[in-house]
Image 1: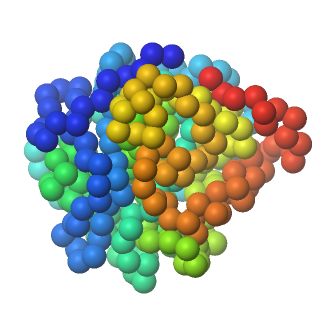
Image 2: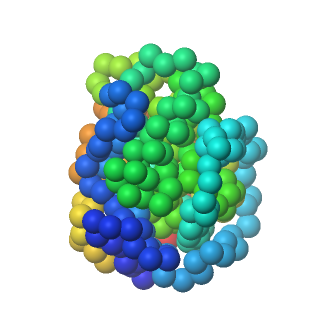
Length: 272
């Protein structure tokens, strides 16, 4: 697997490249902050989704996903560029580091504010997360390009290619309860997204770092849980200790939704 190049310039690059930021920043709504994120340049196949590498044997039903238009509002100008990569073999879980006591009906406005912070102060060309989940378990499509396609996001520095980023709206530091509908929605999303290419959520995936600002020098082949936390790939507290502690259960639930048994005979075999 060839490592992909990544930019960290402090300006908007030209087509096929994007600016990244390494630290959270405040957005327009008070106290809303962003996890540390990064974007990747897909050197090949840009603008065209690639075919799945393997047929899906253990798949899961697509959960209900609210389209971008529901939160995007009245936008003008050219749509953001879309980059596609290889089949998605891992999901990185984030939290938005924003207040938890929101009304779920207000989630579209919160997502709009998060997007404004990333595309404004952070100079991203679109919201970085592929998906967002509110505390009521509603899943929202984030980054443009198609929920069922391998869209290269801007969520995990060095590891945006062949992964999907899902952000839990809220802050889930140690001792903070993770709402059951939110955890179930993340599991359902992971089961469906990974099931598109028959990936067992309980296995481990091998990815190549595209940026030395991640935990791994550029070009390093690193191994992750197929459902991993943001902190596994980048030095950050995201997705919070409480949500991170839920990931083993989320993996098991995702595997169950794919119709897999509890046997883990292949659990030691990494995905490549």
